Length: 246
Image 1 (cartoon, rainbow, N blue to C red):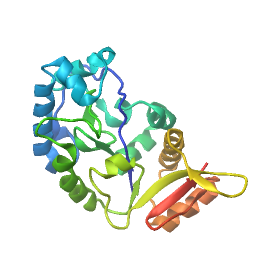
Image 2: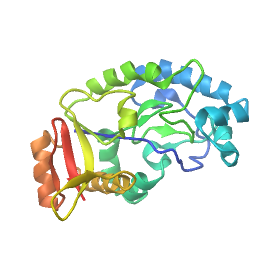
Image 3: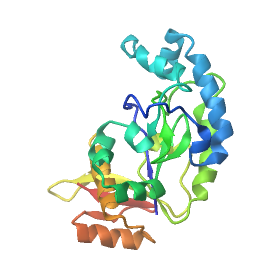
C-alpha cells in the first residue's frame, strides 16, 4: 500500500548543514525535467516580490515566502515529512516516530507537491511556497503536472490510499483501484457530513497509527480489518471511497 498525502502551505525553516537541493536525490526521477522547468519559472517569478506575491496569493507580510522561492537552489534541505507543518503534519508528528516507522514511511508515504510533483517522505527538499492554485506564468499547474503525476501514480505497486484534498486530486488522478479517504462525522440521528478544516487532524492521526504499526496492507479488506482491531472507525463509502468516522 502507498499513502498519498497533500502538502502543507506552511513549511519548517532550516535544514541539514551544508545541504542543498539535489533533484537526483528525490524519488520519481521521471519528473526531474518538469521539476527543473518549475524551479526556473518560480525563481524568475520571484525576482519581483509584488508580482510573485500576487501570483501566489500572498500579503505583504508574507513576502518572506517569495524570498524562500528566490533561494530554492541554495537553501538547506529536510526530509519532506519533516519539512511540512500545519494541522495534518503536526498530528502525524514525524519527529517523534521511532526509526523503524520513519523507514516504513520512506517506502510507503508519498506527498503531492505543487513544485516537485511527487516526493517520498524521506526526500530532502528546501522550504518553498507554491499551492495548487498558484498562477505561474506559462506554467499552469494542471497542464504541467496532470498527466505526469497520474502516470507515476499508476506505477506504484499495491493499492493507493488517497488522503489529498480534491484540489490536488485535480492535478493528477490516483490510479484505478485506489481509495479516497473521506473524513466524516456522524450526528445523533446517524446523518453523516464531511469535515473540512478539522479533517486534517484526523488524517494525521490516522497516518501516524499506520506508520507505528508498520503494516503494508495487501488490499482494502486488510486495511479495514486492521482499523477495526485498532478501534478506528473506517468503513466503506461510495465507490472508490473509504469513510473515516470521527
